[in-house]
Length: 315
Ligand code: SAM
Image 1 (tube, protein in one colour):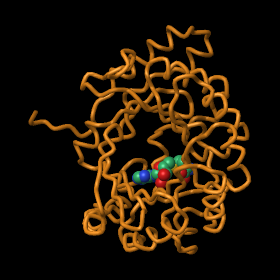
Image 2 (tube, protein in one colour):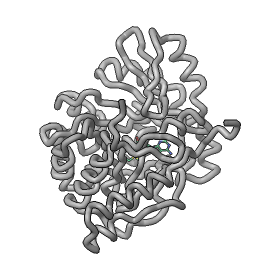
Image 3 (cartoon, helix red, strand yellow):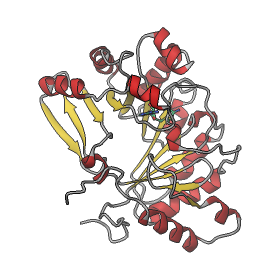
Image 4 (cartoon, protein in one colour):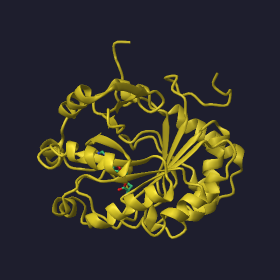
């Protein structure tokens, strides 16, 4: 039985996940980056620790159980541990996770774990240091050190986010599976989203993941679905490695099982990565003294604006 307080949108999808962008600042410049779908420059307007924690608390009061912190690069925020511990303390929250490029993680992984962070996703498109640098402007060794530190700090699971790019790394998933096995992490193969990148780039590098799915289907002991996470496929391989496939493009099943609302780094509720026409400003009302009832209303309004980007028009 679902708790009565869980909000559902007009398509019957529950609101269970909140993805909070804590900054637009980043130390990397990834060629493929969708910047969490943020169209505008935040002009350095960022939510404070207290504002982020308050928004998360309102969301949890409305039935959200899982919060993900993202950016920009969340580790650019010097107060990230305070954000984590404030959110981790919210009664009713079941899962708090972070997505990072990992480059600054090795020094702070343990502290984040102690502060109450449950899980970490680390972006890693390749194990080739030259290609890594070309794609991200960063240094592979630092990301690898971050991954090791995350595993050592006790995060479980640590996941690697590998965006697949045609002609760049689409042949590399087997190497990455071997690395995932060695480091005892989960690998996520992610289809390139056409957000905040130009058409030419998308046409050149988008890869459908069909080959990877077929390879995994042949290797897997079993294949499952993450029901409240876009019905993503999870492949359990005989060597105990787990691979998830994130395949959003033209995928009605993915969108029909989306349970997420986003918050931009400058405090706007955003119903979908792919769309920017339905933003609800929650930060300005907070700064003007809105009470929690008003903030709940804004969440409900944003939730009503959630709709599957790809929907089955035959039903
Ligand atoms: N800086 C952090 C990082 O690198 O993980 C957090 C922000 S990044 C935008 C969040 C996630 O989005 C990463 O896992 C990244 O691989 C993924 N991502 C970025 N651009 C993407 C795109 N065009 N298509 C699919 N995934 C993308």
